[in-house]
Image (cartoon, rainbow, N blue to C red):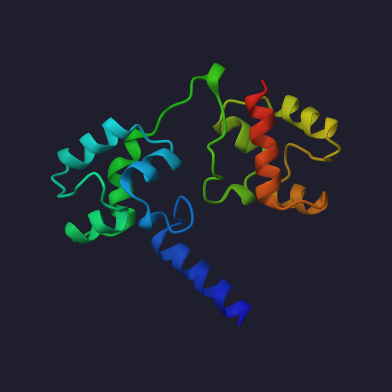
Length: 161
């Protein structure tokens, strides 16, 4: 039964893409914008410019249904409102983006303007063995952590720079 569930999840992800976080479609817009690192004013302007009907308290799913779209389509409309972190202010989002477990430390660091060598050294200082070419999931598993726990540690390291 578990294998069937995983197969269905993987198929849905291939067809519809990964949501930014679990049940994102049920989040009110403001909450969704905050959790996905989107500038609220810019995201709302993008929705208006696209001619979508919505109330600011609507969930992503409600906006999608009112406009005959999927939640993913609505997300694509607002994605250009993503806040860009300056190199000096680089940080990891509060929630791990979809696919983070499959990303290498090097790729994650490149995406968020972090120095991979410094991150690896900081992990080592916490007793976590890691290499820049290893995935988050593999490092977590090898060190007796969950990928989410490792991501939280990576966020702490990124914030301390």
